[in-house]
Image (cartoon, rainbow, N blue to C red; front, top):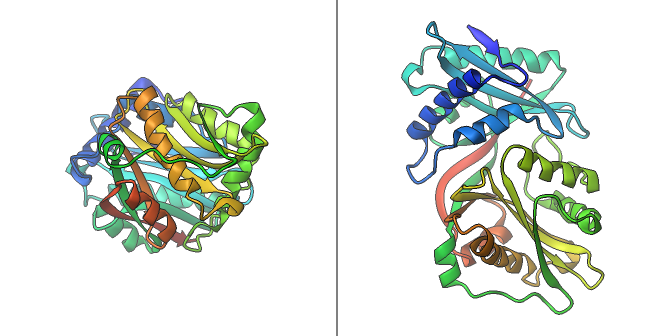
Length: 325
């Protein structure tokens, strides 16, 4: 039986969902990758995204446990009203190859067609059950990625603090950006429009002060912490930034968010400097963070070079996949 989780889901629904994602995590990912906490799962299920509507489905066994779960994000803001993102489709390892994934996908596909969506994308580890499953459905790998990990302690020891070019200075904050910086921060995020995207149907959003505030509040509302390090010019405008997300306040592995530099300031070491300064901020304000994980497109040579200089090591391959409906 397939069900749609309540809005908001009950504690019992969250527990059953979390049991599936935890079991799949242990089976599918390296031991070094910490399991998602129950509070992280609850935050994702209970707090909707600022720019979309999520549908959470579960395949329920006779004893009431969940055999598989799926989350579909339907974008509700331009320019992506035509597409969607399959955030999760996971089957408990103990019941795989029994048709659970196919039933969940059938319900997801019906939802996509009912909503008039013409494509759906997802991000997966390569070489595992997920890739084999989406291949069987007709998904195409659009952008090869690699997951990288940086050990904070080692990076602090092996790299020296970096100075910014003359006329720039560091700033950092947790949570929502100060009002005076929100507009220029949005413009720096918009500078990512030229990052490799694999020609996906989903297009980069146009950031403004409202959306950067909404994205930061979402992290907080889900129980996490967003740490931003920026480079400011003499007019106190953001010209570069990098972000780290702690999914819970006691997370030991942070997720590296966007790193972006305005075109006029590229080629001057600014991106590398803000990423190195992020290590100092985490050491001082979030000393429990031991690692930073990130995904980089294999064709993004500039960011790969920056990350290599800061001690990131390859962990596992991944990819962005897409299906046309």
